[in-house]
Amino acid sequence: MRLQLRPPGLGQPWRHRPALLAVPFGLVVAITVLDLLTGENIQLGPLLVVAPALAAMIGGVRLTALAGALAVGAQITLSALLGGVTTANHQAQIVALFLVALFVVAFRAVHERHEQALHKARWVADVAQKVLLRPLPDRIGALRIASVYVAAEAEAQIGGDLYAVAPGRYGTRFLIGDVRGKGLSAVGDAALLLGAFRAAAHRNPPLPRLVAHLHNAVHWDTVEPTGAPDYGEGFVTAAILEVPADEQLLRLISCGHPPPLLLRDGKVTFLTVGDPALPLGVGGERSEEDYAPEPFSYRGGDVLLLYTDGVVEARDSHGAFYDLAGNVAAWHETEPERLVRLIHESLLAHAGGSLGDDAAFVAVERLA
Image (tube, rainbow, N blue to C red; front, side, top):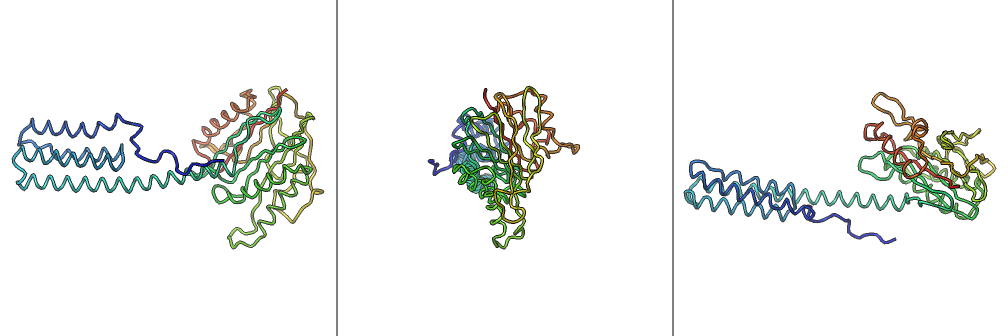
């Protein structure tokens, strides 16, 4: 994968808005003409400070400096035509305008450096998200897939929720999980689990052996001394599924995770396992004998919806939880891309525009 060495969008912020370039300079011309027309009794020269101030709002350092220089030049011209540059009043106006313009240019330069640093940080976060939480393919065999991830941290694009898919020799495996905690503090645990899943799933071990491997990876990471205050307390709720290519079913192992939804013939069903396992990382080391996958019918035309608890635990202003199953049943939507878009829009509207926890959901349609 080739990454850009320079974040896009850095440079002069006004380069995509050329029409605004004329505004500060037009003000300089207009104020100068009006001041000449009103004569010596009414002095409009001090209003020239608006030009560099406005340039700093719509442009960069160079535009601000140019507007400031033109404003000072216009003030000197006005002083020469309306009483002379040597008078104390005009000299004070020229010096004051010069100092204000200089301050505005310096402020714009500092602001631009902070803006570029923030832009780079967001660019790095975007790259990290694509590396850690890779976009899921739109289609694998007879499966159409769409996903959405919403981080709880205001400036973050990654957090403690995760999902991954691994096509294999006998079918496709899905992982969706929720790391203890939220936001950037959970990114490390999410990276560990995603790496363990991708490394093991392609070797096509039996599903119980794969889940045992994921559990042990999280377990041994939490018992390794780190000196962190939450040492030994990490765990991940997860659902690991296997969709065989030649059978009309799926196999599910739930490790303390919310049950997936199955959409079939306009009805929504929870895929609830009889004896869910403990979250990954809780308890000692485990083997594949500790896990038993549960089969569920999964036919052509069915849609599987995986999600994290950040979706169903989102509250509105009255404290009511988001009704995922009810909304999905009411929409009668089976196309994965449109379905996840509807959930995303409805979820944000329900929560007032922002979530208190990371949220992720994946829709998988099995084509006939």
